[in-house]
Image (cartoon, rainbow, N blue to C red; front, side, top):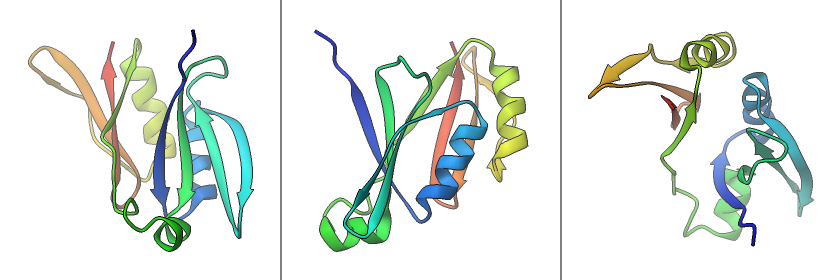
Length: 122
């Protein structure tokens, strides 16, 4: 049995956030129209089983207001943290420097003012 995991992200600009994730190596899996809105599914790898689905927060506030302000805490693990940091620094408007805490290196980035994520060294 294969299980796929999708985290829903509610963002101000689906296209802009998708573009930022694509710049750091994510791939677009699917693009759909839902009502008057568009949603995009992205993954770190075309064959992977972890996905992010971007939703327009205005659409979510209108159709599912109870979840509109939910913000996941997502951390991605990579084997070459320095290379990923260089990609993120070139693409993302907000990012932090690599820090090591308790022997584990990581850094954060944001795709919008209030959507923060992290990369951890695998």
